[in-house]
Length: 482
Ligand SMILES: NC(=O)c1ccc[n+]([C@@H]2O[C@H](COP(=O)([O-])OP(=O)(O)OC[C@H]3O[C@@H](n4cnc5c(N)ncnc54)[C@H](O)[C@@H]3O)[C@@H](O)[C@H]2O)c1
Image (cartoon, rainbow, N blue to C red; front, side, top):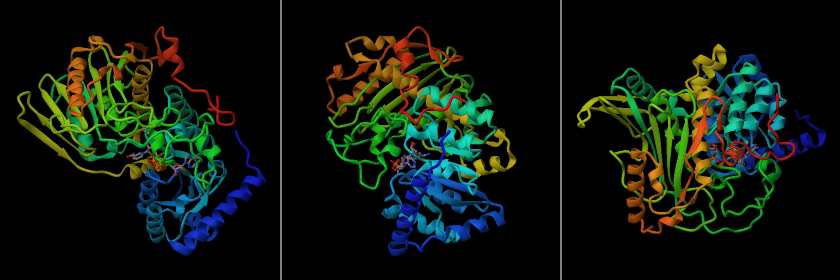
């Protein structure tokens, strides 16, 4: 593993001092880390470090600060300007008022992991960091909450599961719908045969995403330690206008909307099918259409996952669209006795085959609280979204993207490779594209139908596809072997 050195310690100390000074001037009162940390020990609360808090990490900060049995001792971000950003300052003010002090700021995750006043590491960095940060934290003896998708590729996702088991750590996936009462009841109804045998699960991610602007070559913000931000990813210049968030649309860091919003619906779709393994085959068709910009990932995509006795069909639509059965971001499951629709993270409704309402399910929950409960009980079975669930659902997104990335330009009839239901989804996609004035279907890529061995988590007879199951890790940021 890594070892800290004095130079980095001093740099982090300076960074913390400057962040605290700025916060003291413009925002909440200056942090008192050492006194606060002594208090934490005395109260015996679970001590949390949040890693990456420009966006979703803010929900982590306020989520843990609101729980009675946790305290946020450290906040880490490789952009030292993050604590001074407007929406973040508001979150930090809330955290401070709830727990009586501000967490200490550090810029380098390695400084978080060597601390004795951190029990839990909660990761909300970009996707390309998730597996490495989680594994480093597990090796350092911490329990981990890791955002979705838990991995940037299939191989590293399985490695987190292996490390979690080997080191006996509690590792939660950030798919919060798993903790919502209404979603759990919906899924229990499905699993109890409420609509008979479920043979098709749809995941829908109809979420309009505008252009991110043209390709530019620009410097990372001066406040960002870019080497740290890149971590395992190759050293390349920044080619997007907005540094944060828009990395989602670049293969080196993100996984497109399939692995952004879509992973939530992928997870629920697989959960509904009751499949605790990856599929037997996958095919994807899609494109980045409707505008030309710097992004690389598809904004329009269909993936068909074959499970033998059932299938999962996923649709991404990033251009304005109509809904399907009232659903835009959600799921539809079909059985021989009816269907179930869920249009959010905490509710569902079951219908007879002719559309008569059978039952509704509704109710929220607290995913952070579920994690902390399992941290205390030391029982993986107490988690609603154990890392293995996160790995499988994240991996399905990666498999869909692998077929897409190996695709060739669309030629008429190419959709015949899809199942009957997949072809129906393709016709709706073509209609949707026409409504957005996209008529050149050759802009779409048709991926190969890839056979997959779910036990080995490898493609069968396709070295090109197997190569995309992992990545070249940059020196110093390799996934450890044991
Ligand atoms: N569960 C949910 O509903 C939900 C919602 C939104 C985002 N997310 C997930 O949260 C993650 C972050 O998304 P976002 O929208 O907040 O992205 P973002 O780019 O806005 O923020 C990521 C932050 O992580 C920091 N960072 C990058 N590498 C780091 C490192 N090595 N150490 C410390 N900090 C580092 C960045 O500087 C940035 O501040 C993504 O994986 C995303 O999929 C989950």
